[in-house]
Amino acid sequence: MPNKANARKELRKTAKRTAWNRGRKKAFREAIKETVGKEKYEEAAKTAQKAQKALDKAAKRGAIKKKTAARKLSRLMKKVNAKKVAKK
Image (tube, rainbow, N blue to C red; front, side):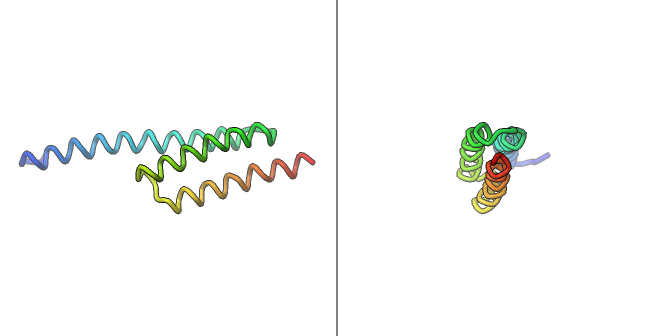
């Protein structure tokens, strides 16, 4: 345990930030899983928008890095677009 007052405060701040970041990461992970789980292209495309929003928000707030969000979105859209090709 920290001894100084400012160290105790930093510990509280870190715990709060960690909780927020966990929530943000969970939101985009669930959105990605939901999108990948869809069978039809139209449904997957709609949920991909939610996943994109969650990824962008996590990157904006610093839960993940900007390029990590871009990479995850790119891979997700690749899977979504593969459903469009498979449909034909």
